[in-house]
Image: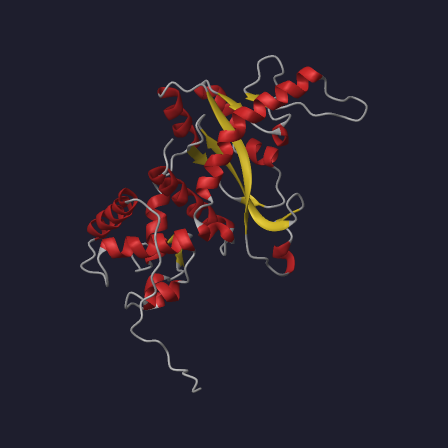
Length: 288
């Protein structure tokens, strides 16, 4: 039997993109408006096709060279990791970074997100943290991103959801060795909740975040200590908090449906931009 080693040219790589047309229209509209704003005369592909390629990369974690070859463009056109003064070069033709930057700019700040929940009549939010796996680095850069809790390298993010599990805010990335309670204090979440007049439910990792035992803003479960086991009432209270917090896990599940988060290959600053862009896309796709 003769072995055929010639490349299969003329064959397009296809996959199903499980996203709504509204999400595609959102991204293509942002690209179209940005091109008009910067006065771009032309691009290799129209805004709708650019949005489709970027969404496929984000959703399925496709190799950029594969997506470029199937659309008659070069890989360098789809991906140009350029930095200038710490900002993305949005007008340099780097489609992926261009769209991520446009989407991340629409992500709400913490105070505005809490204010929006208050205006809708909400009284409580759900607080939790998650570790996004990253590629292992060598040398001294390997240590900060290693999480002893998860036994893996990654970046720590905090997120707030409403009572139904819709994501409303996500924090900046912190090294994986950071603790959730320290990250929450750095973001001044307790003070922001006080200003908005909201409460929060969190897991045992945030115990001690709120120092006011008489009128706490953040409610967590109770921890058992050596020689002081939990009473039946305290166990029941923990079950009630866990039941109300279950919706928070749905929000993280929706976010991690974007398979580019399977293993992030960028530093903390760029990962923050990526997560906030995915927050906008997740809210456009899923609303409970």
